[in-house]
Image 1 (spheres, one colour):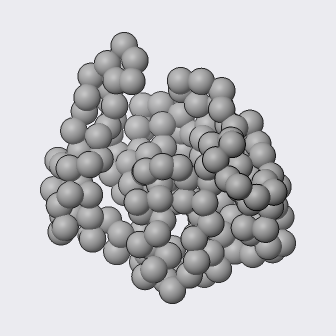
Image 2: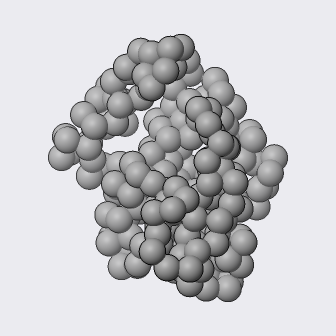
Image 3: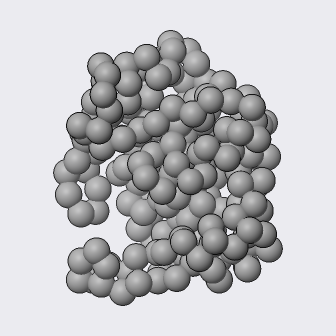
Length: 178
């Protein structure tokens, strides 16, 4: 099934800028069997880590975080780009492959020592993942895992995450070597 899910992901050349091979996950989430398989795999992996809340990263991470949280009977905290949340927030710098941005969460989204699973669609260089982990830790949450559907292995993002946050377990379901 993992092979079928990987085959659903399409590469779009030169998007969002020249030289980038964008991994389009929309065909995967449109396929009920593949989408549910991915959600089930993440939820099964996450359950063993005993999270108390699931945090999803804007925007495609929300597509996976919410159904995983539902399966685990947990709530969802959201990590958004700066300026999109209406109440008091906590912010971290979140550089990525394209620009320097900032991630925010409501200041009361995660409680001190709360066990948090972070979910996103893709790990590339790892910079966004590191920023999301930093943000949860800034709120004094305990990150018990970081789950991603896709990993671009050639960018060594997991190595960067592990170097910065060696205490965080990481799951990537589908790897692309190039």
